[in-house]
Image (tube, rainbow, N blue to C red):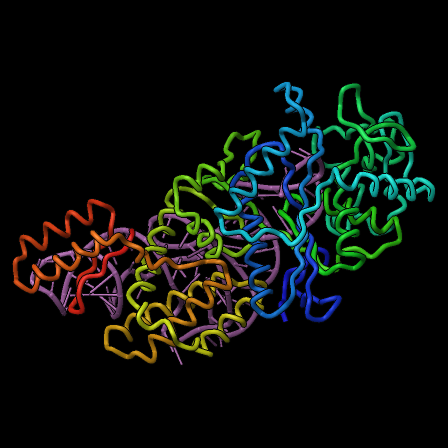
Length: 453
RNA sequence: GGCGACGUGGCCGAGUGGUUUAGGCAAGGGCCUGCAAAGCCCUGUACCAGGGUUCGAUUCCCUGCGUCGCCUCCA
C-alpha cells in the first residue's frame, strides 16, 4: 500500500483506491504556448516515476493529463506574432511530446484537449448558473465561492486572510463580482479572439473549468489522485474542486503536489525573474537520464536546485552505473535479490522515498562489484538483477554501450594481442586512438572491453 | 499582513533523541594494473545562533537571524 502525502489533510496517508487493482490519476498538463522548461520536466518526471512504480506493483494505471490549448497566454502570443492560435498550440504540443519522449516519460493513457470539451464546460457552467452557484457579469460567468462551504481546503487559509494579504496586489475585477475571490468560469471574447457559443455570449472557458470537466468526464467522480506542481495547489486545484463541490460531485480523493525547480540561488524559476531554463537546451546538452537521476536523488516535495554542477554529478554517477551494467553483463540472467526488492518497495511505499532507493541501488552496485572482483557469480547475478529491476521500475535504463562497429572491435582484439606480446607501446597507441574516438576502454585479465562513453 | 517550508560535511542531498549517525559528486591515501581505466578499501569527524526540556539534541520546544514558496498567470 502506497503511503503518500496528501495536500488536503497535510499528512501522509495510504492512497486509497476507488476500485481495487486500478488507479485513476489526473495530472494537470501544460498550457501550450511556449517551450517546456525544467519545471515542466520535473513534474512530468515525478509523475512518470509514480506511474511506472504503481504499474510495476501490478496495478492498472489510468493517467489522464490534459493539454490546455485555449488560454489568454496563447491568444496573446498569437496576436503578438500575427499567427493563428491553433498554429501555436499544435507546434508547442509536438515540441512538448518530443521533449517528454527524450526524457523517457511514458505518454499518458489519455491526453484530452480543452478545445474538445467546450460543450461539456458550457453544460457544466449552465448547471451552476441555474442553481445560482454561478452568475453572469459584463465580462463573463463567475463561480460564487460562497456556495462552496469548505473553500480553502487546499489553500489552508481563510478567505479573509487570503484577501487581506498580497501586499499591494489588486484583486482582479473585484468591483463586478459578488465576492472578490469568485473566479471566471467563462470569459466573453473580444472581437477576433477564438470563441465558442454559449447561452451568455460567445467566449471561452476559464482554465479551472477545463480541468474539472475533463477529469470528471474521463475518470468520474471520486477518482483516486489529482496531482501537479506546488503552484497549482491554489488557486487552480482549489478552484477545480470548488466547481465539483458546487455541482454536488465528489472530486479527487487525494492531492499530490511536487516541489519546484529552483535556480542555484534557491529561487523559483519564473519568467519575471528571467531565470527559466529551457528543457530543450538541457536535453541537447546532457544525457536525459541525468535529470531523472537528479530528481530521484531528491524528495519529490523538496525544492530541487538544478545547475551544471548538479547535472554533472549525475552524469558521473550514471557513468558508474553503466559501467557496472557492462562489466556484469555476462551475469544478466539472475533472479532479483528478494531482500533488495523488499527494501525498494518499503522505501517507495513511504511517500516515494526515492533518495533511499538510490542509496540502496548504489550500495547494491558496490556489493555486486565486490562480488564480481572475487568471482562470486551467484551474488553478482541476483544483485545485478535487483538493480536492473529497480531502475527499470523507475524508468532508468542502463546502457551497455556494446553496440560498437566491427572495426572498433577489431582494434580491441589487436590491443589484447599487443598486451599479450607485451608490446605496450602499440597497446597504448591503440587505446589512445579508441579513447580519442570517444570510447571507454577497460582492460582486464579477461580481455579488453570497449563501450560507448 | 496570513499560511507553509527550510537552514546538514568542499558541492548536492536524505535522515535520526544516544552505540557502526544515508547516498551521489569532488578531494587525499592505498590495493589491483605493464601503465591507465573500471572496481574495491580507507580518510575527512557535518548538522544557522542563543536559550529550554532530557541522563543525553543535529533531531523536541521557544526566541533570534537568514533563505524560499503560496496568497496573481505559472509544473
